[in-house]
Length: 443
Image (cartoon, rainbow, N blue to C red; front, side, top):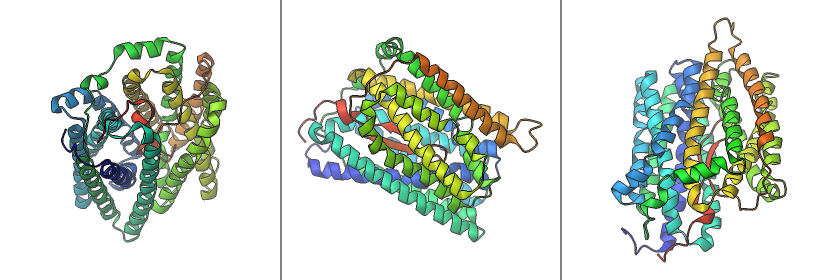
C-alpha cells in the first residue's frame, strides 16, 4: 500500500529521524506549558491543572483510534494526520505569547488537543511499525531509536530552558515562549514529514486494534491482576495530588529562574533514562511485587523531603533519587502487564488502563488544587499538598499486600516519552510492537 517499493533502509532511517524530531518537540513544547501559564499571570492551580487535565482528553480520544483507522483504511494516514494537527496545536500558544495574554480556556483547549492527538497515534503507530520492521531487528532498532529520541528531548529541554532564561533576563519572557513553541511546532511538522515518507507494506487488519472486552475482563479477574490495577491507580492518584504543583512551587515560593527549573527537571529525566537499562538487567531476579514495593518506598517521601530545604544541591539529589525510583516503579508495573497479558490482549488492556490512569491523575490533581487554595491555609498550601501526598502514597502501599508475586521473564520494551515532569522525570508509554508483534512482510 502506498510506498510499497521503498527500501527498508530508507524507512528505518525516516523512522529514526521521526523519533528525533518528536523528542525535540516534547522537550521544547508541552514540558513548559505550566511555566507558560504562570508567565501569563495565571495562578498555581491553573498551572498545575494544565499539566494534568488535558491528559484525560488524550486517553479518551485514544479510544476512537480503531474507528478512525478503519475509516481511513490506513494506520499511516491516521498517524500522519494526527501528527500534523498536533503540530498546529502550538499555533494558539505562539499567538498568545506574542499577544502577551491568553485566557485559561484556550490554554486548556490547546493542551487538550495536543494530548488528544498525540496519544491517539500510539495504537496505530505501533501496529504500523509491527508490519514494517522485521522481527529479527525490531527490539534492537526500537531501543536505539528511543535512545536517539531521548537525547534529542534532553538537548531541546536544555536549549529551551536557556532561551527562556535569556528572554526573561531581557524582560521579554513571553517572547521566549513564542520562540520555543514555534520551534516545537516546526519539530512536529518535520516529524510528520518523516512519517509520511515511510511505507505501509502490509496494513494490520483493523480488527487487531479493536478493544477487546474479553481480554480486559480476563486481565482484571485473573490471578490478582485487578488488585495490581487497583494499587497502581490509587498510587497514581496519591502521587498527582502534588505532582502538578512542583513547577509553580519552584517558579513561585522557591524563586527559581528558568535555568534552575530546567536543570531540576532534566536531572530527574536523565536519572530515569540512565537507570532503566541497569534496572532491566537486574529486575528479572526480583519479581514485580518486590520491585513495586521497594521503588514505591523510594517515591513516597519525595514531596515531604522537598520541604526540608530549598538548597539547590539538596533538590538535585532528590531528583536523582526520584528519577531512579520512578524508573524502577514504572518498569516493574509495565513488565507485570506484559507478563500477564496475551499478545492479542495487550493493546486493549493498556488502552483502557491509560484511560483509568488519566482519571486517577485528574482526580489527584483536583484534590491537590483544592488543598492548595484551601481557605485558611495562610500561605501554607504547598506544605499541605506535599504532606497529604506523602501520607497518601504511604497508605496506598498497603494495597500491595493483595498483589501476587510474579517473575519477570520478558525483555524490557522500548518506551516513548510523551512528556517530562519535574516530579518524576517523564511520562512514558511502551511500544507494543517491540517484542510480540508478528513477523513483517518483505519490504
